[in-house]
Length: 478
Ligand code: NAD
Image (cartoon, rainbow, N blue to C red; front, side):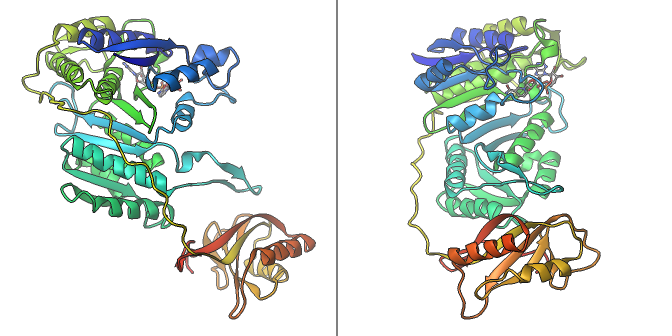
């Protein structure tokens, strides 16, 4: 018996959760349910997080959380509970299988069976944003070595456990050489530990196009957070319906299982919604808690039901479907098929798909880190970079000289193009000349000089080398 936390959520949530629980219990799931309230009611009662602190205690104690979709109220001030849960509980891995059910659910891609493994905690989703000038705002893209190692290893271990043949990595490291570059580098390092699994890397733009066009070319795809967010919806949609996919959010301690769709408020309370997405989440949960036999029974009964043409309105199609059913009737049909296997769709065989046991991240010895320069960002409303350079040169200190100015990353001084469009946000790069060194005291002096010269500095970024290797990008055109 495993104790799990259940939240029935909002909109269609309670209906699809009831259907899901009824099915898995009928199939023999050994679970004890502890229910908590999250979502709209909690938000509207004045809790901007959408969850009470006692509910966190329950989730953390039980460690396994099955969650129906929730409605985040419109308007500012409400924090997405999904994002908070993933980050608070360290649910670093988002696993989303996307499989087409041809010929029973219409799709342009009859042969499609891919799993998107999305990094779930970092990247642009760190949510660190600032307005810096009148014209420019920024969002910090944070990619960490532990973040990359954990997610990439998860993808390979998952592929190994599920007998999948290939892991593909999508990044944009031709542009983001540091951030996406690290993700790709870690992918290459870890791939070597799994010689039996094929590996490949695609630049995300052409990779995404290929996935949308020829999904049968892929198996497991691992990627950073933002790309994974977008592409996992694309992947689910092109199987035929986003209403059919579930996802697992896996952490070292806790895990959360859900449908990928939202609370569909317009369909609520009408016995219309398709419970399949949440059911798929629940099947992943059963596997995770070591009840693979039950998971297998449920999945095969579900496949059989889809194959029989017993469909909810969202996937019902004249000529393909046979019986249009509501949420409750669909659940009854799946329960009636427990013990059966599909005859045209491939039955599943879950030998032992329990939670993966990954090694803990081990921090590497620190590199030799050397300060080699500084980028000083300046808010300036002029438009002639040569004029700015003259001003900025006056703040140079102790052999630490202005070497370059960029605007939105494009070099505009020295030797800029007059055609380059400039905003009010300028990066001024300082490096020591031959025989000089830069240190933090020098940087403070530079900034003091800027203050005295009435130059509006908005931030600095130190330029480092790690074990002699440059840890910063060049200016575009440099
Ligand atoms: P949605 O996924 O709720 O609905 C999109 C469309 O798909 C609608 O036409 C809906 O009727 C249909 N649909 C979705 N699930 C279905 C199902 N199981 N059966 C039949 N039809 C289904 O997306 P939305 O309308 O953009 O969002 C509605 C609310 O859900 C918002 O408040 C949003 O914040 C929330 N949301 C929550 C989650 C979550 O809790 N994980 C995820 C996404 C959106």
